[in-house]
Image 1: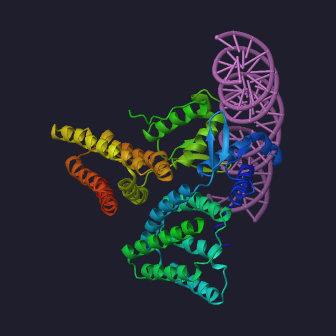
Image 2: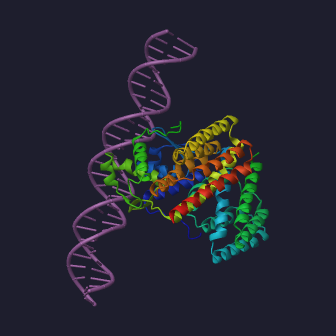
Image 3: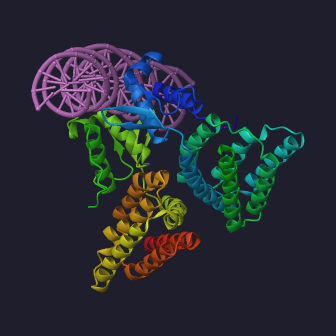
Length: 218
Length: 218
DNA sequence: ACGGCCCATATTGTCGACAAAATGACACCT
DNA sequence: AGGTGTCATTTTGTCGACAATATGGGCCGT
């Protein structure tokens, strides 16, 4: 992928990544309990590193811990998804606004290039767009905001949770071409350094996306 | 205080609260290194609980950890404060919008009551407003959003960092009466269930606050 | 004198064992 | 029969010791 691949240096890192992946991909089912002993034998590490991994999972809001009781994977609820998208709308809207202000001309050119690549794929009828391409697009804008708090909250925090919902509720479907147009307009606003419009378009983009998902759930 | 006082049940909880307080209040100076051994002797607990406490501090973005090297308290920079307020503007704006939608009539009445109390104090010339009253006001709106992610991000995350800046850069000053008027208008918008206006006013309120602080720094 | 290498030291990461708390089952009382 | 109190078991919380890694100083070669 891009140069943004986080790499594990300590053992707890590796265990954390493995557990996070297992949870997001649904191998560990949502709502289930995480037994420290069980996991420590399964992953062949001491309970200390399991505990550290679980603590970090809690930071991502992927698990919930109760003192002296243990940790459970969060359970996925329709309302939870709505709340998640509300926060996402807020943060990514601000990210787009800041990107319009702070991205370098070169970064914007790269972003246009990415959009063009997607255009070729969409024209070719690939449904591939949604999964990897969409997150790549959003990542660039988030990073382009140059706001470390924003970047951390979204990429280390919300995005894994959102992906968890996507995977486990089976969101692969279309909304490809219309989303592409929305992306195009957002890039145009950023390119014009129109902060106000960039934020507004990003918020509407995410709002549409939420409504699309909600419709799919009912 | 209000019924929102988090209470420590495990030892790591207590140590975490103590450390967090020490960092926010500046007893542990910003940018300094956190030695696990040193802290474990100082607080008379094992290194394990210190490590857990430090991990949690990292989740709040109050310390930064590097593997095999250690943890340092974050350093306060003007740019960092700006970024923080950008995120705050985004999240609290959304909180106000959701509060306008989701707060119960009773909660809104309580909020008006709080505002009235503040009015009496401001009229009496108290400067007390800024510190406790201001956060109380904002807390109620955040909680009123009924969005768990939003509540957690702001109250467990950003607010301690913001308070750290406030304390250590010595923000006590006025802006009392003007802020009061802004609060009043926000409550009015929420009371009218005007989501759009509530968000906009909250964002401007925080923007003003940021500009006020920036001016004070230069 | 300067730069690079190597080793001693100190700090973090990991482990297994013990202490404390919660969970569930069983017996007992009403 | 239903509820309650107690006890055994299981799970989490805490601890001290060991392993692995980074840091700093001194030595050597150029």
